Length: 404
Image (tube, rainbow, N blue to C red; front, side, top):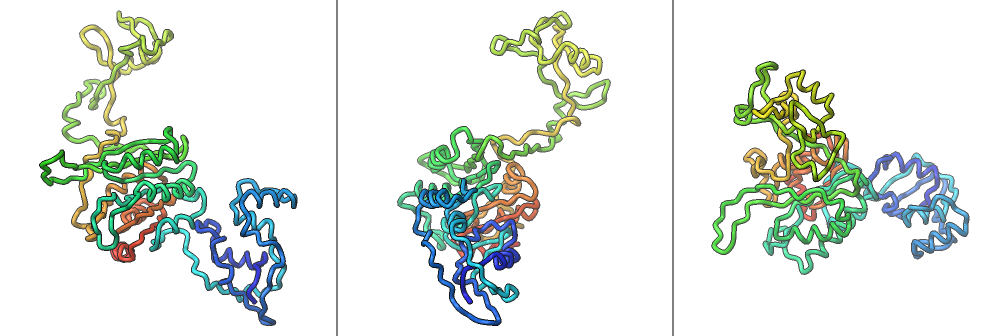
């Protein structure tokens, strides 16, 4: 029989849909869940109110009237389930057949309109979102025409969904060109809040085309927003180059390369610290350390003095993590021969490796709603993340499948 699903059937469904399912269970068309028994086949029609026509406020009021608890924060579909408990039906659950298409949770590439696909993703279920959306250039890429009557609206509709599905400690990274980056900033300031803007990264993407009318563009803009002040961020460091090492001094005592940094504040009037103002080696300054700490550094030969007796702190290279990655990236070149997929908008794997490493952790789920050739997915495989990819072009998925 085809009917309302009871608790036993729900348990069976949970073997099809694992606990960490990201796609809403409510989206399954219940009419396509066939429940067969050995006795009879009949249709059970509910005589209860049609709650699907009710607004959220009406559903909440009904929950209050029925003294149903736990409705706060629930989606409409959950409220309906709470209001309309399943009919008790004896079912042979071993013969449950699912004829609806159930999408796996992770490591998938779905083809379709990304706005519709995003709406099927559960609230606050994604750790990191990366996107390289259309740039509204007017170019015809064969599989889509990069021209929109209202580009900001097109992006805002999708970014609204991205905000919904992003976890509270998640980040969204939007890769665009400078000509349209201001649209993205305005939309994201409104959705995520100005205080959650993290970075505008300049990636030197190359390009030597001559331009007689303006400066030629040779960089892309990568905009980063978080959903809250507690977003994930993992600083990266580049190794010191041989040229950098040659510029360093050698400590005669510790026999190690070092650079130096200031030991005192050169503008104490800006941030006065009377407790750190004292005389050292004939010089009264506002120091960055207590007198006891400065003495400890001196005794360990970690101070370098100038001819006036003012010390600087020795920073040994082997005790430092390297050169911090900052917001200008000129060390990642464009696509290399070994990774080219002949997809027009493909980005280099090293670029996605860096983005994923900065803004997500191992085991996280990353989503790209404009996946194209699927560089995010390939990078996630390398870095032990799960991925969800969407794109409207079926050929893009074919390219990804072949390259993976």
